[in-house]
Image 1 (cartoon, rainbow, N blue to C red):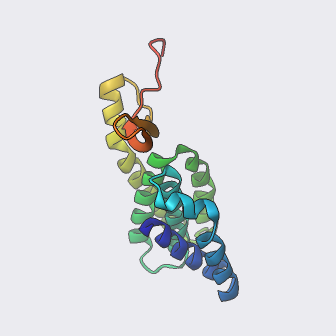
Image 2: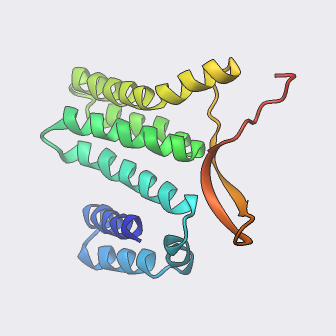
Length: 173
């Protein structure tokens, strides 16, 4: 529930920056009262973590555009984006567009643009590196294989979601 509350606050802050307070409150209410998000926030589900990490990444990307501490925020942004990629790899589609925004925003000062983009890429890579090393040692390939897997609990006859490495490779790979 706590992660969902933080997600709601991040949505409010993003909406407030982009629009006005009225729209931000409406966005907060829509996210906070969304039936799917309410249901999955009380159950351990990967979508809650995915939504939080992606929203945090967007918030930090936008914070870099306004911040006086650009480099510190770029490092935090890269870490949050790396964690978001660990949670859901499809979030990676967002990164090229965000980096393009930095080049457009800082087009007058190319050194700042290249530094910010480099920091984001380096910290994202460093966040993903332990998983890549582990997968290379275990599978002799660098692939992302951490997923949320639905497991059956035999004692209670219930289903739970657990973080577990799942091998997605066949012997032919």
